[in-house]
Length: 280
Image 1 (cartoon, one colour):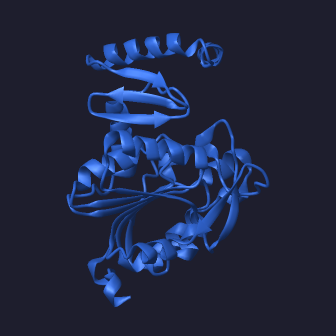
Image 2: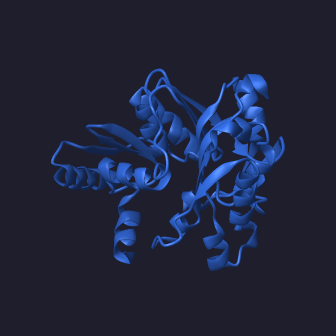
């Protein structure tokens, strides 16, 4: 792995990226047995026959592998249907948004929320290149109150978070209730959340939203608290108590080999607890 990172670092620069792009394109094309193209335009564009992903770093996983992983992780308990509404909190570069968009179709809607400005630009570009007209993108952090917050700017962009960051980027923090109300969403069929520990703050700002939500998939990050002694990342007990209080049947995967999957919480609202927006 170290030698791969060293080669990537050496080639991922102006004048050398062409060779890296050619090699990555050939690798993906052989892997999929279809013509694939990778190129750099301020971010890495991964062009597959079935869709396009835009990321800060070159990704050697092909779209079918990314889709399989997303399906197993985020849609293990519930798969969105045509015409449904998905709220994707912590959308990242948008690979899950792409799959959600295809599932809900032209009569459905995906609200895709990402806090980090550079990652958000990848998300927006992904939507543009794939012509995802049923996706609404928002650049903000979801938290427990409406205020400015800092999000870190680590090279490992998947780990960026809003805890203890006095550097990085200042971004708008909004509650999920305020976002849902401003968009006049009639319901939320699936709420997906992956915000690096801030999920314990986010649930404190979604008292209205939870009443109109049917299914959830929330990534908790206790495994990071255990691994790195960062107690601010511990959120699972808070999320479980919140969902139980609001009438969700909860599913977890405690025997899964990956700790991040073991900490993921899935839930489906018992029908008598679902409240449409008009009744809230």
